[in-house]
Image (cartoon, rainbow, N blue to C red; front, side, top):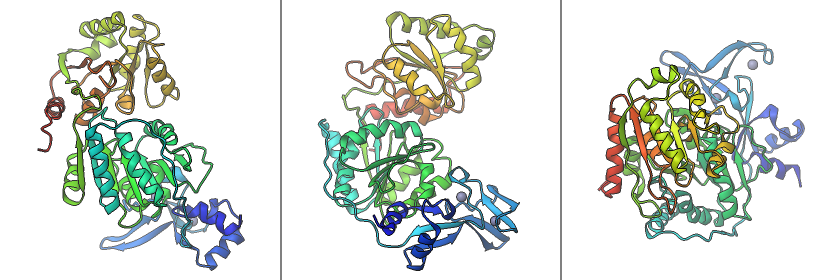
Length: 456
Ligand SMILES: [Zn+2]
Ligand SMILES: [Zn+2]
């Protein structure tokens, strides 16, 4: 393959640091001379009314606090680098960024879709609406309750785009979601070049037509995609981080649609799509049964009791019942520290009970063990609030009044219960020391969804 083509395949749609390009310098120089590659400074200074301000050309961050000013050995002057996108390799004032401006690569237009499942009439309706928006290039919000089968509703629009020779991205804020989606997409599109990008991923092909990526990875894209689907759009850190939202915008081609898929859209996302996009609502799970409503139970001084090496009575009772009935369970905690104090106490009931949080590398295996009934239950942080399905799982939240359990988090946590046939119901208990607005709001929204009254 000619070097031109290799560089084209690698760089098209990306914004890449010149000094880490895997090609000989003279070839890159040649491509620049030919006008196939445009260069730009990594960090620029922009004049403002109060002096000057830095801007990172990769992640577009202009907030002054994430810039570090240092004496640079490279350019031998005072240089600034951006900490906001530092994980993707350091971008500083004297580093050069490259974008591809040559011919766009041509992608295949004959993709096989190998998916045998059936869509319910409401899924069918939503997927057709999403397809229409995709064809018209209009952003679409797919507001679909937990367990409504939202991934399947993306297949048809993605298939349409692939067959048009378009490049597509499916982005999610969390790596767990990406890892969950990858095998499903690979199975649905067996002949399509698909790559998953996340921190530490082994990338084999740079010319993938369908890319699954954590939103962070989008810092390294530039007008690459003809459409992007943001899954779990309300999940941390996407909602909290403006630069990630900007990264999504700059990763798509100008005027390409950005679609959002979520069970718990923020008021802002709803308002935005009411104004300039389309919305489909799926208030029913694919099996047609209602979402489990939370029930509130007081649990006074749970923190103190756990620290005194006692499981509070109601929580102990609840756990024993699950063990006796052989129902798998998840118990959510607001804090790792408290969960780790609780872990050995629960292990006295059954030594196989264990805890998982974000730093546990083997949390996927532990979830798998719960699914296979090799362990009876898990203690967890909000890391398991979404993206997992365990048949017949029962869920408790300890300290539901804590601020980390906002409305969206509680709805997602409850969304783990009753997902699969035949266990379409289950217990969803909020142990608390005082009912919060978030608890009330979550309950109200679940009721509204069950009555199909949302947004009507
Ligand atoms: Zn940056
Ligand atoms: Zn420098």
